[in-house]
Structures are given as structure tokens and as C-alpha cells.
Length: 137
Image (cartoon, rainbow, N blue to C red; front, side, top):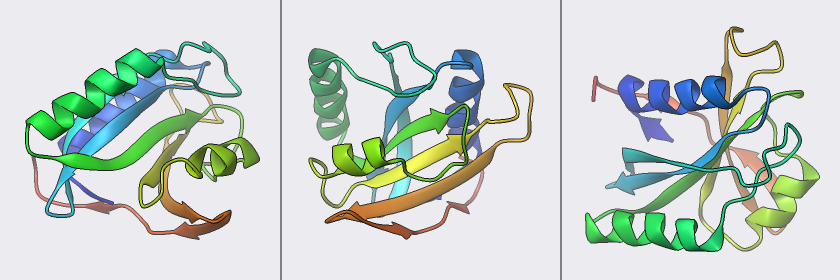
């Protein structure tokens, strides 16, 4: 994931605001670089999983496409574990081929230094792709 510091800060801030529950949202990309962050509501309101309302997700994806972008990543936080895809994440990823999974780890609490990692998950196989912070915005 290529992302500006400002956009990455928005993702981390979202994770901190929602702690101790998981946050979730999507990241729009253009030309392989994050172009915008779209927070979503975790309707599960859980520290163990996230769930996005189908209508909200449709609205977010439509907005991304209307602005000339495409879905590049689904992001969420892990509030009790390392930022590595859980089996639930792997199962969910099957419906989203080619999309990265950016995970913010806040196991040390909302004020802890976040650990941010990004992965591709294809056919149940997890591959870390890294997070490259670029430019200022």
C-alpha cells in the first residue's frame, strides 16, 4: 500500500477513536497510490470483529468510483492482537479478490504506538505487501 502520511494518520486516528472496538473502512486508490480514506461504521461494535452495513458499503464504493478511483484496500483495526489477518479476515477476503487488507494494531491501547501492516489474501494464502508512506498528501 502506497499512502500519504496524512491519509495513514486518518486511518490510525479512526482506529484510536473506536478503541476498544475495531474500526473499519475502505481506501480508494488511483494509479496504485491511496487517494482517499472512507471510514465506515462497525455495526458489530465489537473488539473482536468488524461488520459494515451493505448499504453503507455500496454508498462508499459508488463514491470511490464516481471520483475516478477504485477500491484498493479494506482497513480495520485489531485491538487485542497483532496486526495480522485472523481466520475471520481470511474468510471475508475471499469475497474481495485483489484488495489489500490494511490492519492497524492497537493491542497496547488507544494511546499505544500503532503497528500498521498491509496484506493480500488470495485463496486463503496471506502475503504481506507492506506499507509505503509517500509524500505529504
